[in-house]
Length: 549
Image 1 (cartoon, rainbow, N blue to C red):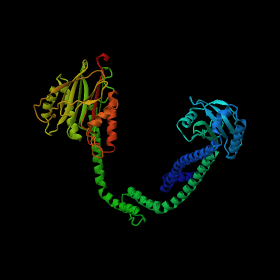
Image 2: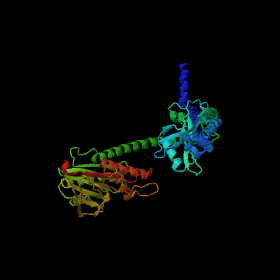
Image 3: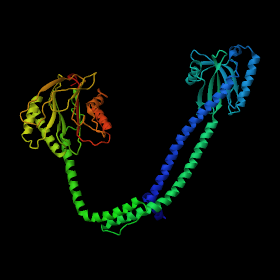
Image 4: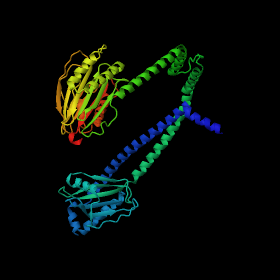
């Protein structure tokens, strides 16, 4: 008995037929639920519209039974015979058209917060209610703001009618709709409102009937679909696939060529699958050794590349927040290579207690050559920066050092700046790198179009010019490599510096980490699923002033 249960469980879990049938049934059920909700929503809205319009016509007819010129006389106790006659007509009309209440009121137009009853006819038998008719002249506060808006629309906005739905009630009343129409005197002035409350049980009953019919229909359709799927898929698809599967399992176990699978199915795709399996068996036997050797080589390369990526990642700052003991600045950087390893790098380090060195660079090329050059350049720039030279001298000395061992003729764009943390003065030099951007408190990020020197590695003896920027408390500096503005979508459009500035200025007062996250999000949204062709490297620093040290 336990064996049969286990076998049945395995069949449900592993059988293609069972999974296809379950999928069809699930999709049918999901489709049924979705269509039922959409249909119910559409049906309810259409029913409510029809209910409102038909009730409006009944209420409009009832309003014509009232002599609007005499409402004040009725309220003053005049014309009692005419009042009783009109009341009787409205009462009979209420019973005739099967509504719960027909009433006429005079609304206080100062704020529509109160009204006075003129006529109030009730038929409690229609909906098994227990309403008590209001006496002539009965005064009452308006029920809620919704009623106030409806009254105002009729009195002041010329609305022909207004409807309030109470399909789900919480005060013990039955579901109903209340339609209001203007009561006009002989001068076509609105002097009152006739309200008609109509039971909405037909809507509830119709909704229940609709849901029941949908459920029954879906059960029947699901049963038919499952029966057809059981017959069709087992006969036309599952059996041929099972035959091909058995041959594939046999080959994977024995690694020998078996009998041919010609004409296994009437479907071309399955017949092609069988033919492909036959061809694969022949090819696999021939190339098994080559594939094993290639796989081993690929595994070794992947391991080496992974190790290279880890070494490169370890060279870059990666512990954030950095400089946790400093309150006068905050810095954050990120580098996302286009391949396993990249040629971009950034660095930030304190030269002493009052000077912060910032650098960002982009090595020409991609992959391992760029990564090796990147590591050599980063070490060279860092070491020379720690000798106390200015940015221009650092770039010049680094260029000479790198050029001395640059037989591969790789070149590097570099932006390097030294921030005086006591004054906020940033001294920088640019070796062919992208323009930096700066933000001052109360403003927006803007490009700083500095003068570029020649890239590092181009030739010996280059000289670079320095410039200064004044950072005030709250100012931020954002630098980046060309992978940011040159990010490309599937339409081959560039992200560009304009879009970059939009991303920066989305939250210019945010911290450096958030600013980099905003830029990356904008790039990802723009690029979509297009391949990343260049490294994306960004660095942002916020200067907070010496008083916070």
